[in-house]
Amino acid sequence: MAEVVIMPKQGQSVESCIVSEFKKKTGDTVKVGDILFGYETDKATFEEESKVEGTVLAVFFNDGDEIPVLTNVMVIGQPGESFAEFVPGTAQERSETLPAASDGPLPLSVPSVAAASEETSSPSANGALIPGAPASPRARMIAADKGVNLDAVAGSGPHGRIIARDVEAAAAAQGRLSGLAKARIAEGGLVAGEGSGLAGTVKGGDLKTWKPNHTDIAGEGEEFEVVKMSNMRKLIAKSMYNSLQNSAQLTHMLGADARRIQALRKKAKKALEEGKISANITINDFVCFAVIKALQKFPNVNSHCLGDAMRIFNCVNLGCAVDTERGLMVPVIKNAEELNIIGLSKELKKAADACKKGAFNPDLLAAEAGSFTVSNLGGYGVEWFTPIINVPQSAILGVGTIVPRPKDIGGGVTAFVPYLGLSLTYDHRAIDGGEATRFLKQVATEIETLEVEF
Image (cartoon, rainbow, N blue to C red; front, side, top):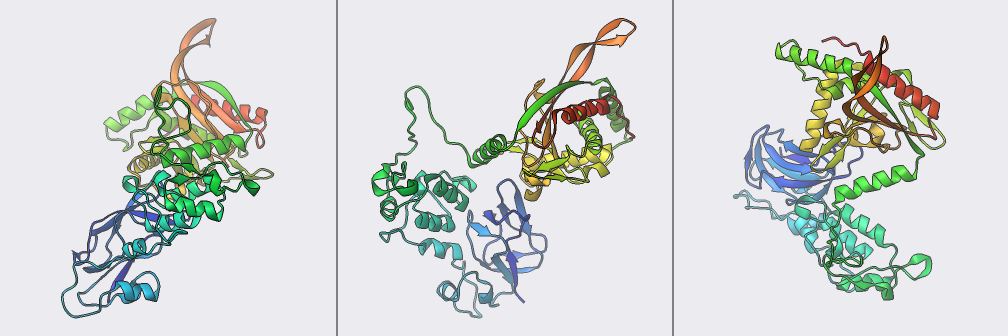
């Protein structure tokens, strides 16, 4: 019996995925565990393994297509088996795209649903498809419906392919269009300007000529070059702007005596070399362990600010910022308070590696997944900074580098002691300055008196 392979749902927030490459084509034989295709979300990449043996009877999409989750992608079975019931789309699409069933050899390929939709995408007002850069069928349909010039849209899909979210963002940015404006944009060469109609509607006379790599910034091409942001950068920028616009942020800074965690780091390194432990515990791991202990004593900081209410967590879902080639990611370690220092170290390293490979669970990259975030720039030599809250979280701790500072060590003696810079940014709507200061001091105290077993 033929088995259908669907596009997996990688997390509750993921609505569609992009196929990066089909590893198996129509007519290929597959075994259990073979990679069928690779696919990606905004920030993560995955591979789909075959759960059955057989022959690929049909592949319904092409490399680079954006596919809604839980949609049938391909069928595996025995040569000659019917797979008509598994083809995505309407009965009419099936009859137009499927070859007649026969006992003869399989065709080299079956016309894909994506290819068919590419050829039958919704036409623009004058009956012509919107031209532009390589785009998914869904993106072209949305562009035609909303009056978006695909030539002026930067793609965020594989190899710069324009996908649905790119067109949706462009449509939102240009605003409402009149019927005439949509029709003229569909003819090509024009983009929306500032709307002069009712409620800011963009009329035909508001359109302007679009030129590749052109902006309205004076002096461009003479003294400087303007480069458009990547989609990932746009998402980060939007998140940071939203954070600052919708919360009352204030930063307190405090130094913590780092002698204790430096000694623990040396002890852990020796234990690793002797084979007594299996984790390379870092300074950041010790800091995060101390933060977890402090959060358990200050539950109001371990929270989300919801405007007129607070979500106070009974567990610590710790986010830790990771710098990757695709941009900043903040993976979350759920129930971090249940881990010992070795377990925490392993989970933090596992999460960071997964983010750099683009294979971390998208749901655990969402700001809502975490209850508190730590961002460490100490490795770059930064002493202090003002981290931006990962809203709706109520606070974030910035960790700086360790520098020597004078300290009274008793007996009238002042000596230089290694100090770790701590910068706490908090939402003043949810946390008072006094409570924030006491929490930050508690973090320092936990760092200075940390007791761990390994």
